[in-house]
Image (cartoon, rainbow, N blue to C red; front, top):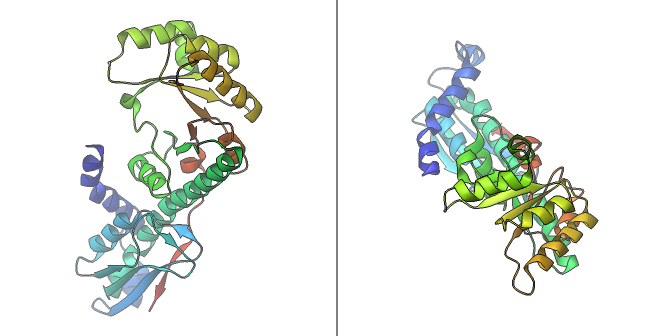
Length: 294
């Protein structure tokens, strides 16, 4: 449902980006390139990347020149090596040049998110393997660029990660400010449990082991272990297992807060089910892509 809505708005986003870039017109192209001159160009990866945003790039070229011939060399989610041709464009040179920057911006931004996610996933899997625990799923957050959330979260999936809540209506996540506003952790969870829709899972953020023990009494679906170092995460996992013993562990555990490429392996080794990282979207460097004239 959400995907259908945002796909219907794809052209709105692309047209906004083109209008922003064009201003009153591409004066350089108008002065240097004949209106009906024909040409061809390739969109190329300058460094290793995981591709995302291809449909937005295609739409940018189609909007600038409906007659352009577009030949993708890869699909979203593909690993593209340096020099790999992502897309070949043939047709009116002016249309190609006019859409170039917008198409590259979409590809660079979203492939950057996918590529960073891929690195997080690889490091998490390696850390879990060495520790002999199941690898956690790498999750994004709502720390996304306004207006680009759907596309950035989709890029996380292209990089091998998974999506946390898309929006505030997707689940109950009781965070520190909810606890303060409600008066206590217990009161916030009681209200969520007693008044929430039966089909929404409940997750609660805890800052220390004391809060964790208190939260477990309400049997939330997931506990978010916020800003805990790896030794504390391991103790937290022990508390969760002990609470549910001798039966299976029913409460899932998510580690969050400042997780980076330098720390994700050790965090994953603690045995948590999920690792969420805002860095996937708010700190991903743009992938290096360019357009080469053929």
